Image (cartoon, rainbow, N blue to C red; front, side, top):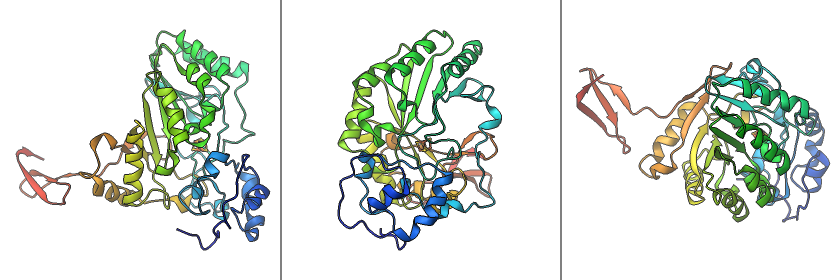
Length: 359
Ligand code: SF4
């Protein structure tokens, strides 16, 4: 699909360094000069980074890859329903770098830097090159909090992107967590394997190899992101018996068609990634162009039921605005009929009465 606003690039241009500024985007032919003033305004609010590996996948600026990372003038327009902290992280942070929402687990955010900056990010008000890294003292306080909260069994490392840490710093965190007997599980959420796969090198894979139950959750939104380089990076982790899960965001113009969603789910399974979550877009400021209504998302998934293998099936989830937690919002196949018996809808749309079940 070609945008009426952003013209196609005039032939492929080799991009050898991360694009970070409006000038970089103009030079790469990814935005038209007429948009420059508005994009400078966007740049004052939100970070931009497009690493070469990801930039090389962009065929036209408004294609499913370009849309995710190229700034757009609409980002300066905030709608009434949008919120700078849409899932209520800030109120649940007992010390910098920790978010505690659920009884048995906590988020550890060691840095707010990412390999790229997604234009739909729910933490867009916080992430960026200026967002920084927890310094040694702040990290020590965050780890102390985990050490003293023995009801926490799982640490979810997020950010920013934890794989932007150096392997040395990652190993230091792993060593600290291994010293806490109550921490059984460590989960790392990352965009690095698809955005900048070389960064997930042998040294980093080794740093992730811990005595705890380690899980890597790769954020991937389109099948084309799973390049041979990305799959090789993922294999470096899988080779250490670390299971890899996938999480995606349902995004207009990226994966909101049956074909795109089917390709995305199949590509993950082909890379031995178990699709875990499909997120409903959080209402972060300036992200309306990516919004897909929940009912449309449910119809999209219902249309794939029966066509795509069950191991490719993610849980469609909504983070309830205001920090009330995450809930599944999958298509509902059951309803109660007028006779009080349950009815179930089959993948082909036919309705069947369950004789032995009452509603
Ligand atoms: S990588 Fe994650 S935290 Fe970073 S900009 Fe994208 S969605 Fe936000």
